[in-house]
Amino acid sequence: RGDISIKLDSFSFGVVLLELLTGLKPYDEDREAKDLVSYIEEYIEDDDSDVVNTIHDKSIGQLDERIGLQLYAISRKCIEHFKKNRPTMTEVLESLER
Image 1 (tube, rainbow, N blue to C red):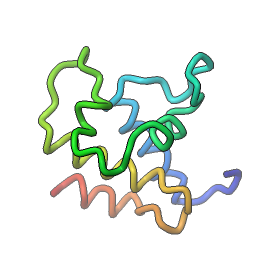
Image 2: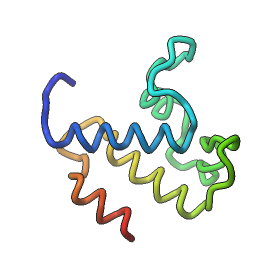
Image 3: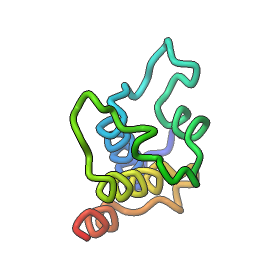
């Protein structure tokens, strides 16, 4: 945190994807884990086979589970703690096009 790099773009994009999937704000003073990334990291198990139904905001309609899993996987890569492990936006685009 604090360093500006091209990997910051992918982190921000990952947060936006999580906002779209969950319907949650990126920061919420009333939530135990104040920021969305911490919430996902603390409360969602990586091996949760039903992760889309766990995090998906049902009020925005139905989400194809396969697409939801792909978007969730992309978002998790983007919010990776170690910047060097985050994808570039070119790699994110390639993942989205699949």
